[in-house]
Image (tube, rainbow, N blue to C red; front, side, top):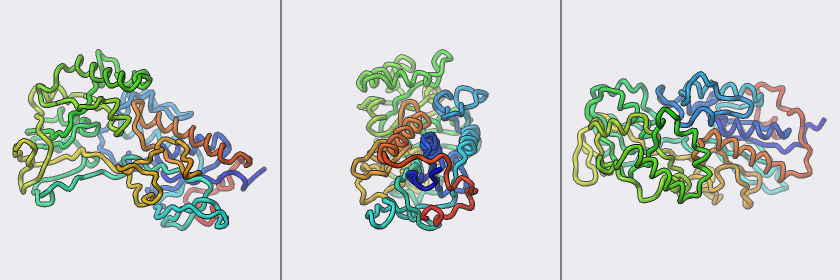
Length: 408
């Protein structure tokens, strides 16, 4: 039985996309080794606030061979997602080396060994293929507004929201009303806060979580089939029919449609679950783009000065890939891979990315699509290598796997 002739694959990231890629490769007899800087599976999910629920319907959270537990309702809570990924990792039964930070990635000359070298805090690995699956939302982004460091109130990113009850009675400014901003505002709408302002540069495309009791995200695959101009029009029409003209409340539509922004910028339509009603009853007020901070105030476009006690920044995330790929030419201006969902990059054979593009159906569905592309691509690039039925690493516990084992 072949032990060493299979293409050797290292997956960087033991989250949703990395585990799904490993599953697809294993189905083809290719046993990947997974490394991750965290101490356990699904670490980014564990760090999110306890009230968080997926904004995708549970049917789009199924994993290969593991349906999402339906007992959690249409939209699955954070802890159930963590349990789902933990179960998937156990069933996958592949070695995962945790607490292994990647320091450097380089392509080697043929005479030096395997094509890719991955330098980590636990030594160097060599591989025929490297799958990068560290996530589009790895690092919360906090803009450096003038005066920010002198503000005496609390400034936090939406990723650090914590228990929502702590905002009761407090004056709060939320900067941004995209997907994460609307999630924050949905929760704040259920708390007896003080004043709440939302600072906007561009208004979001807003969709109802449910319409007449029907979960709207169940239609995501249908919406995804529409040509982009039709999708833009459909999203705009749905918003107008459900909510009326939101510009009366300061929620102006972006000049580009919701579908266009999703495809071009990775900005998903925001799912409303109480936010719009709170705006209409005056609990939440729209203000202009944030310009600067004072010691106890924030100045927004239009000259308005507001005085929040807490500022919640729903200002997006960064992938943090620049330190590895600055010289590779594989990242766009926002630091996201051009081939972010498992596509083959002819200029960098053996290098794959998964989990870096948002889709209407969500990241679970996108991970499955990307995993199939990667597995098919690895097989295509290694046509003369037989696959193996059992990994030489399978008998090792993840904690005992050492880098030199991979390089022999």
